[in-house]
Length: 487
Image 1: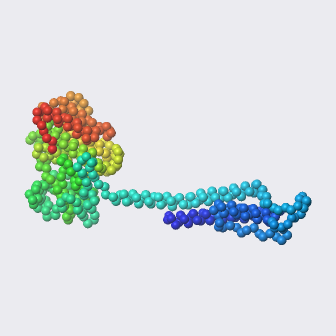
Image 2 (image 1 turned 60 degrees about the vertical axis):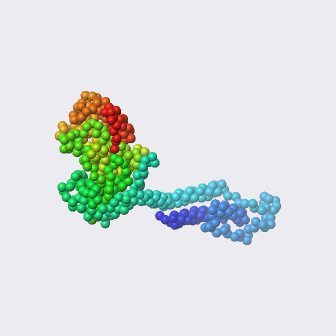
Image 3 (image 1 turned 120 degrees about the vertical axis):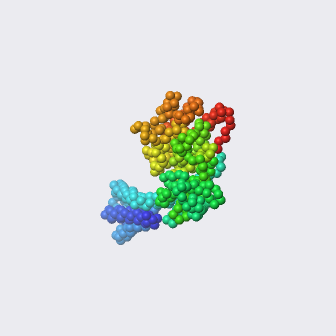
């Protein structure tokens, strides 16, 4: 309903009030014609009522004036008239008497009409007013939705400005990227990967295949090629480009460039040569030479710092949503790099509110509240980190379908055993038993127990986890008599 329609309804309602009031005044005048009072008296009262109506906002739609006095009746300024009770003294009429019943009836009628008309006007106009308010609200919401969200770091840290969000557009014709990362041609990627030779595959996940390769400038890279070019795959591709374009931390995976030529969507990363944490804990490398306790604490602490950077140093906070051992890549001296940001989300809500999303991730690492409701929070990442830390402590996979029914999940099976020495002797990785003290083991077990609390509010923040692991790392340095640098 437009503004002109509302004005029309208001004018129509005002016209109705005036016409009805005029009809009531006409009816009152008709009653006066049947009384024995003088025309001058009727005229005086009529003028008073007319003046009163004008002061109330009238001025339009009045009934005609009372009939002109008949010749047999004296005017108000005529001479004295005779009567049986005034002893022939001059008498001029000062007004007309109207019975209280008649006067009250007319007044109540006018008030009732005004109230009814006002209510009718409100009922008629309220849908239009509500429609206007809702339209304005929707326009404001749509305007806010078109404003690109930027990720910036806190003032005390190096800036993390989102450079890819506003410069990446995915449409029917493909992806156009104009950010700071280098744009590679498809020919560049084909030469680097030896035309996508299967012998060069170094990894494969749900989103794509990763090839090892060498660029023309002799720089070793990892090239991730998107498996599917559908809406979901492109959303993950865009999310990873946005995140890696703005997140700069020594424990975060570094993106070198991007290729969106033809039907290929490729991400070019730095090559991390030592494989993933999963490979060292559960793969062939475990048989060759397992990670010692110092290396495990170093990996745990550095990975925790990378996750804390996402949660506490970025604004809005970033939730990784797929933190697991296969997404922690290791260099030769084991400093880790957190990778795979295809499922990452930003926590736009203030406070400790949850972000509703589709349930994505890896079974065994998902927090209970997220797996059951789909509501995501930074504490969901804390749970996933606790699972990885439990892997480092036990050397076991988070899910083992070969276990008896009800014991397939590592957290459910091991968490009750983390509170005493006998339980820890059962769950600890045998390859490191002789390498560590019980004091160090019990402290790490306590961190695992806190991170994997069923209730999200009882879990610590990653900054607190970093501080606790830092103390354990310092104790290891004191015991070994060396001063180690963390990457």
